[in-house]
Image 1 (cartoon, helix red, strand yellow):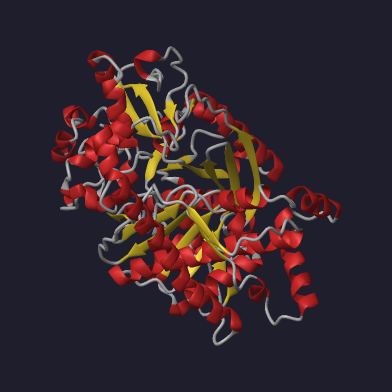
Image 2 (cartoon, rainbow, N blue to C red):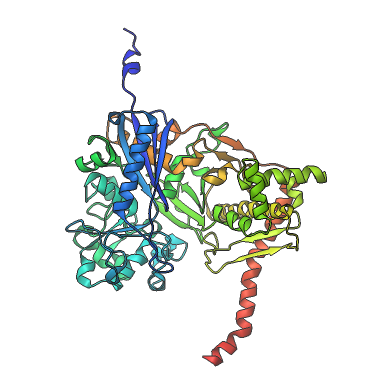
Length: 582
């Protein structure tokens, strides 16, 4: 008998990654070799009862997840029996249930009657006063958040609920990271099992300010000691010691009801998920490329960029950087410390600048006539401008245009939400040529800001020398060239760049199978073995673009600092008048 006969005849096995974003749930099916088979998505509703308040429903999210999974399985033409594992990743949003009856709890507190709206979305900013309260403690653990906790994090939102609910109602609440809530719905397991982490002397840290992972001492300092009571029964996604297992750990199997909902079998294993940005790291940082042996794990920064951007590094030792969240020990990868920077707007910034220009409507019509996206059209228009002018490089066209784009505040590395944008080089030109120059100026800004973040992290002790970029911006060749040359590092664009977060979730599902059976394979080995070949953009040396970007980086830093100086000058000039009027 052919010794390979058993391998050839063995039924194919598939794995599913589910990514719950802000506006939709997406499911991706991969095979056991990491090849993408099919994907599907379904929209998610959002409610905004007041400005700055954003809510969703776990029930409605689960319905969208089930639709996406069924559709992906159907499109892939695979049998449900072939699906061996699934994992859920999601935005850093807070889900609330009762711990005794598993009923949804209204995210609006006592003022709300919409119990079904039991998710406070990551972008919700209702808890500004609670954020100030936590930061005023100046607790030592705040250094793990770049010095201060953010209003976007979950912990201030839990404190807000405490202030806006009766004590009895608050005591009944159980708080989940959204990905853990979905894992709970899928498995029915209230409590994750203890892992070897419970035997270590690892510092408990709530990653990205989530509900889980905090020490009792810190919770007491921020008036939330109730979360640690009775073996952390009011916190989902943890064991009885309050610790969260690493991503990719097995959380059990699908329960009968969830298996029916998803159109799968109850023997499907469920992997512990994570926040979507970290799943993007899982889905990109293991990509294969020429010369990869020179770029070990700790040298790889994942840039997960779409509407916003996250910059994630796994280090061999704890590295503290102002404006960078973390380091978080054993959060995704045991034995490593995860650090995360980010910006509120990348794709959103590009869209804003392009759409407010007077020539946008004309440019969009021409783009549609050529069956191009507005960005592909502008890239071609820039090349035509370069060709007609006889200039040696596209970058020369915008040599005297200096754009600083913190229109929505700065998360990293300055951590100053009051930062704004500035421009040097504006004219009265309303043409498409000028639109193209302004568009290119935003691309330059994004590249220079990534250099700023990477430089600050490496100065503090990280060892980044390569960038792995995913998300919608990864398709922009001009931007990839600018990032590589500005940062003086190779940029790798994975084959799965457009679905990196979903692909990362699928790799977590595979890891859950391997770590719960006799198969060998850590998350890192799964990432390396199942990731596909990536395209590499090398940095340019001694070119016009390189020299121009180096001087523009100096100008970028000056623009960044000068606006803060200007604000300080103004405050000093008017402060006496404000004091007297008060």
